[in-house]
Length: 560
Image: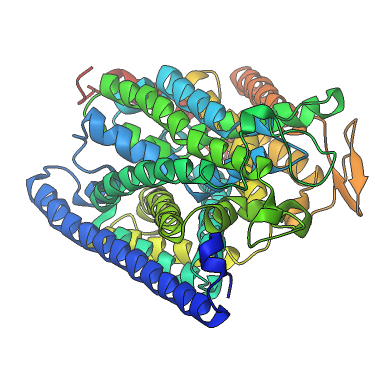
C-alpha cells in the first residue's frame, strides 16, 4: 500500500501505526468520493423530473427534449456545461503530463490555448448558421444536403472519437484512484462509468447540464486548493527558478520546440484546436441555446473558462518537474523514468500534498471525468437516434421508442469506452487521438457542408474516402498501426515510427481540395449531360435543390 508524504514527526511513529493511519486516510477518501458520487447520481435523478416537465409543455417532438432540452438554455448555464464537457480527465492530466515531461514542457501543453481557439472559431463561424436553422444534431446539415448514406458514413469517425474520449477520461480517473486511494482501476473505472451512464440514461440533457454545474464548481475549487499545499512541501523549489530535480540533463519545465519538431508541434496544436469543432458535444450546447446570439456568447465565454481551468494543471506539472522526488516517499527514480509520466498529477497530489488534500484532488478528477463522459455518451446516442435510427431504420418509431433508443445507445457507447479504458496508452496520446479522427475526417466535411454551397454528395464522399485512406496509411503508434506513407522527418525509436511532419493538417487541406474539385467536376458532368441523370444514384443534385429551397423557406424559431 502506497504511503503519502509525512513529516519528520510522523516518521518516528512505528510502521504499524503509520500503516493504520494510511488505511484510515484511504477509508476516509473512499467515503468522500462515495458521497460525491451519490450527490451526482441524485442530481441526475432529480433532473429527470425537469425533463418530464419540459416534455409535457413541448409542442414538438418529445424525444428531442433529451437531446436539446427545450432550446431555452441561458448563457450562464451554457458556459458551465460547455466548459465542464471540455475540462475532462484527459485535459487535466494530459496538460500536467506535457508540462512535467522532460522532453516536452509548457510549450507542448497547448490544451488551454487550443481549446480557447476551438471555442472562438465555433462561435464566429458555426454557432449562428447551425442554431438559426434549428438543427437537432451536428449531422442534420449532412442529412439535408447529402442524404442518408453519407450521414451514416460521417457518424462512424464521430462515434470512434467519442469512444476514445470516454476511454481517455476513464483511464485518467482509474490511474488517480489507484495511486491516491489504493483502489484498483478494475473497480474504480466500472463504478465511475456506471454512475455516469445511469444519470445520463435517465435524465438526458438536463441531467448532464445540472450535474455539470456541480462538477465544474468542484473541479475549480479542489484543484486551486491543492496548489498552495504543494509549495509548502520542502521537496518543492520555486519553479520560476528553473531548477530541475529529475536527476538528468533534461530540459526545464518550460520546454522548447526544436526546428525538427516544429511540424509535430504544429500538427498536435491544430488537432486539439480544430478537432473539437466537429464534436456533437459542442453543438449540443449550441443547439440548446435560447438564440443564435446567446449560442455565440456561450462559446466565447466557455473558451475563456476552459483556458483558466487548465492553469492549475500547468502549475502542478511545473511543481512536479521542479520537485526533488528523493525527499518524498516516492523516491528515485522520478515518475518519468518509471514510465509513470501520464500519472504525474495524481502522484504529485499523493506524495507532495497532505492526504486530505489529495482526496480533494481525486474528487476533482472524478468530477472532470463525469462532466465529460456524460456529454460524450449523450452526443453519440443523439446522433445515432436522430440521424440513423429515426431516419432510416425505423421511420415510424414512436416518441417513447426513440427515448429508449437514446438510453440503450448511451449504455452501449459507455460500455465500449469502459472496455477500452484499460488500455495502457498515454493519457495525452489518447486525448490527442480522440480529436485526431474528427480533425482529419469530419472537420473539413463540416466546414464544407456549412459554408460551401457548391458542395455535393459526390465531392463529400471523395474527400471523406481520401482523408480516411491517407490517415490510415500514415499509421498510428497508439493503435499499433504501422505507417505505409512516410513523410519527411519521420523517426524510428524502439521499433516505433513517429511522423514529425504535420501530415494530419496536410490531410485536412487535401480533403478540402478534393471536396471542392470533385463537387465541381460532378456538377459539370451532370449539368452538361456528360453523365446521364439516371446515374445520380444518391440524388445529389435533387437533394441540393431541395435543401436550398428548404433553407430559404424555413423561418428560424430562435431570436437573434
